[in-house]
Image (cartoon, rainbow over all chains, first blue to last red; front, top):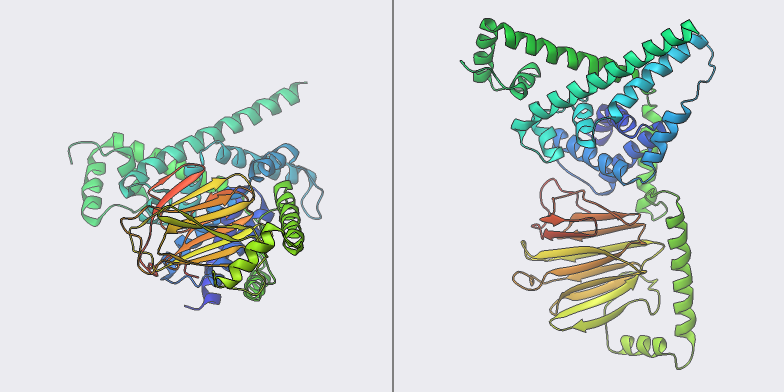
Length: 173
Length: 275
C-alpha cells in the first residue's frame, strides 16, 4: 500500500477522531495532518493496522499536549454560536446545535480513557488494538467499554430530560 | 454455561470480540436465559444511542486532495529545513524564542570580547580538538563539555526553542533518565567513554557499545523547550512539546510529570518511528 493510498483510507477517520476528541474542528484538522507529516518525516514502517495505531496514538498525544484544548472546549460549549445559514431554517439550526451540544457534553462527561475507547471503537479498532492504545488488558476492554457507553447514555438521557423540562417551562411562561 | 456472563463478556459478544468457541457457549446461554437477553438488549441500546449521538457530532467532510497535498508539502518543507512542527503560539513560545535570541546574542558579544573567559574557552576548545560539529552554524560558547566523575556531560542552549538529542550504539537495556529542568540550557550526561558531537540545539552521543551496568544516561531538558526530541539507537523515545513530555514510542519504565526513565531499545526497534 502506498502512502497516498494509506492517507486516503485513514485520513477521514483520523480527522473525525481528532475533531471529536478535541471538540475543535481546526485542531482536529491540524493534528490529523501533523500525524501524517510525522509518519512521512520519520519513515515509520509497518503494516496498515500498525500504522493506523501509530497515527491515532501520535494524534492523541498531540491533542493532549495542546494546553489550549480545555479552553477551546469551554469556548465552544459556552459560545456555541447559532449562525444563520442558507438552507436550513433557524429552528432546524437551533435543533441541530442543541443535539450536538448534548452529545458533546455527554462525551465530555467521560474521562479521557473512556472517550478514547468510544471514539476508537467508532473508527473500527479491535479490542486488542484499543487495549494497546490505553495500556489495558484486552480482557478488560469489554467491561470498560460497557461502562463508558452506559455513562454516556445516562448523561445523554439527563441532557434530554433537562431540555424537555426547559421547553415545558418556556411553553408555560 | 451455568453462570451468567459478566457485563464485559456480553459487551465483547455484542461487538463480535469473543473467540469462536466462547461465542457458541454464550449464544446457548442466551437462548435459555431471559435475564441475560435483557442485559444484552440494554447494552445494544446503549451502543445504538452512542452511535446516534456521535452522528450529531459529525464533522464536515475533509477535502482529501487538499489535505494530502498539504501533508506532502509540509513534510518536504521540513526536510529542507523550512518548516517547523506546530507547537502553538502561546506566551511561552514567544518568550522562549526571544530568550534564545538574547542568549545567543549575549554569547556572541561575550565571545568577541578580548580576554573574555568565553573566548578563551572557545579558542582552547578548538585547539584541543573537542567535539566535531554536526552543522556549520555552531553558536559560539553555548556548548561546553565538562567531566563529572565517571560521567561526561555537555550543556547546550536551545536553538529557537528546539533541542535534538540522539544516542547511538547504546547497549539495549541501558537506563536513561529524561527530566525537565528550569533554565534555558539542556544537559546530557553519559559514561566517560561516550563521544559527544554538538551542533545548533542538538547533540549526538556515540556510546560505542558502552553503557550497560554503568550509571544511567541523563538528559535534562529545559521546560522552556518548545520542541525537543530524544532518540536512542534510532528510536524516538521522547518528545517535549512546549515543555511537556510526549511518548510516541516504547513506554517508559517509570514516569512522573517531570521525569521519565527508559531502557534503551535495540537498534531500529520494529514499528517504532525511525528518523
